[in-house]
Each structure stands twice: as C-alpha cells, then as structure tokens.
Length: 391
Image 1 (cartoon, rainbow, N blue to C red):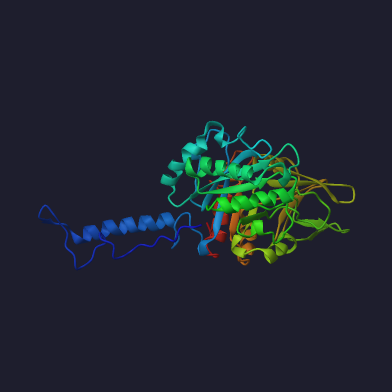
Image 2: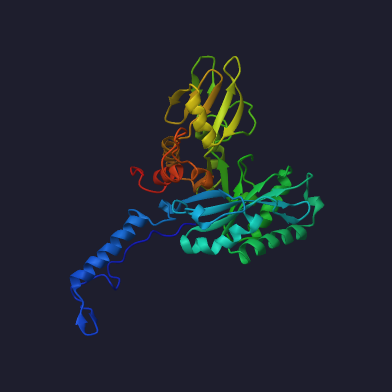
C-alpha cells in the first residue's frame, strides 16, 4: 500500500561530475556553481522527506490510515497528509435495506471531498485516498431478503461512484447491520468485486476464520474492551480497579489482540488509535461505572479548574480526583503505545481523527499541546521512522 522510499540518484543528470562540462550559448557554466546549486536542491529534498524516508512512506510497507471527518467545507489547507500513507474520508451511509446511497451528513454534503481528490493527489503524491462507508439498515436483514444479484448491483454502484467516477483508491467499511451472517455474505461480494484495498472494521466482531474476511484488511480498535469486566463496547481506561486504592493495570494488547493474531495474516491486521480523551466516573467503591469521551478543548479546561492526581505507567497515563478518572492520551504516551505495537508485526495503524488532532493549539489558559498534528507527528516518528528518532 505504501510508496517505496525516495532515493536520490547521484548519477542523475544535473548532479555535477568532474567528467562533464555544461555550456550555455557557448559560455562554460561554472562547475562549482552548478555543484552548489544541486547540493542545495539535494539538501532541501532531504529536509522535506526525512532521513531515507519519503512522505507517505512507512518502514516495511506498513500503513498509517488517517481519518478525516468533514463538515462539508473541506479545503486543501485543512489537510496535511505528510505523516499518513492513506487519507480516509468519513462517513457515507449506505442503507442496505433501501439499496440506496445515503449522504445526509458528510464531507460529500457539498461534494468537497470528491472535488479535493485530484488536488490531494497533486499536493501529496503517493498519498492514497480512501472513502469510509457505513452499512446500515432500518430492520434486521438476512440473505433471504435479497437475491445475490441485487447485492452485487449495490457493490457495483458503489464501485462506479467512488472509484471510477471520483478516483478513490480504496474503501473502509463499517457496519451497523445486526445480522453478522448476512454482513459476512456481503463482505464476500466486496472482496470479489473490488480489487482495490478494502479495510473492514472488526472492532466489535468475534475473531474467526470466516472466508469472507481472510483477504480483507481488518482493523480493530486498540481502545475498545480494555478491561475483563462485562462493560459494553465503549472506550474505557486501560486498567481495572481492585479492592485497593490503586488500580490494577491491564493492557489492551495482552487482552484483546492475541485472538485476532491467531486467525489473520499479521500484515492484514491494523490497530485503530482514537485521539479523544476518555473520562470515567467512580461509584462509592471506586468501581468504574460510566465512561464518556471528551474533546481536547474540554479536557484542557477541566484540567485547569479541577484538582487531578496524575498517574503514569509504560502502558497508560491517567489522572483521577475523588469521583472521576481520565485517560490522558498525550503525544508522549501515544508514542509509548505505538512503540509497543512495533514489536508486533501487524500491518499498520488507523489514526482517528486527523482534523481533531489539528485543532490542538496553544491557548492563553487551556494549553493542550504545541504545534500542528502533535499526536500524528509522534505516532509517525514512533512507528514509521527510526525508533530512536524524536520529532
């Protein structure tokens, strides 16, 4: 999925060689001036792409999908795909029951994403554009409800609209269908009819060797189902509480990932990293009873006006007060997560969401983190570049 690294060919014409003499209108051009000019171009090129790594390239052909949730007013200035191999546009609804394309709230509201695809390919050569599609239905469906030909027509319609007409390079499939058997049957058709990359959200699924999934790229959410309790599928802090005052650490990877690694090619398994903060509420016995997601702006203000006790470990960082606990996914901590993931030879990462990361700026009171894309820069450095390099 990734472009090969960009290498500078020292034998390319234009690089000065003692065996060549260039002349313009009969006047010899200074070899030293030409050498200095080309060295400047070479240095600028290296500064742009980094040490031995071009933009949109990740070591070992790994992928970094960056999700962009638009509001119908996307602009090329809103996007920096330098740290991604794939840019994902969310989210188009496809009502399977009506076999119709539904676009009530998306970047397609004014077709801005569709119009941006050529510009993005020009601005960020090598960056792949993906469309995220959510399959929905007002009722529980089964294979008996539709002849296979109808489902094939639906997939063909999607293919024509997104790939042939608008130039997308791949598709990300999420599903709210309640019949998993029917959903897997539909995935078979996607796998058969679409040769471009297909990424399937299996975050809420049970690991299996179902043939419909074998050739797909599967991604699962690193921040879902983090404790062995009977919690619902919500993003929750990475630890469980025992009877003592201090929590007992339980890492997501040790609980959640091994079953998937048993069934799938490591190179086709991708981990999704959410960037929103998670805030949980304690009951009287210090048990976690509810969790909510907060945006960066909300969290920064909360941290300034309340007393929180920070706790850090290699696997998680969180703060707590008398009634709440908050997972602090700082850029530094996200870098630690990613470094631990590197040792597992999976296919890549899915960063959600790119535009939220870009809204983290320094403020007068509610200071979050410094610079554009602070999370993505650290994730890219920890996962795609040399593990000892910092950004």
